[in-house]
Length: 76
Image (cartoon, rainbow, N blue to C red; front, side, top):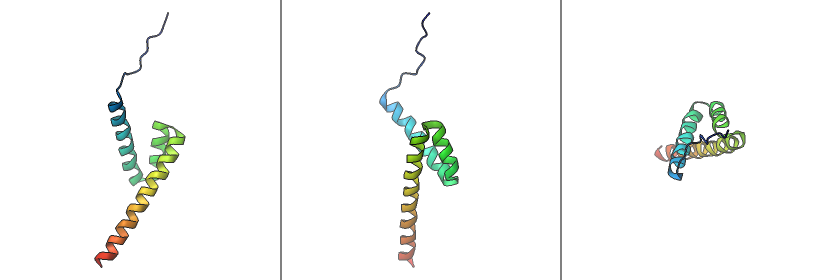
């Protein structure tokens, strides 16, 4: 007796949308707590990918903070 393949057939566009949603949810969770975002990414994507994404998101937030501080100084 053979088992049927139960995987969902998706095209590349659908995969990109799913990964985009996963990334956006992770960014929102990072705003709440980096630990929660790390656990989310580790659960959904695996530990090595989670580590890379948390580092990447942290760098993005750091650059945004620097830009915000620079714009505040220019306004004063």
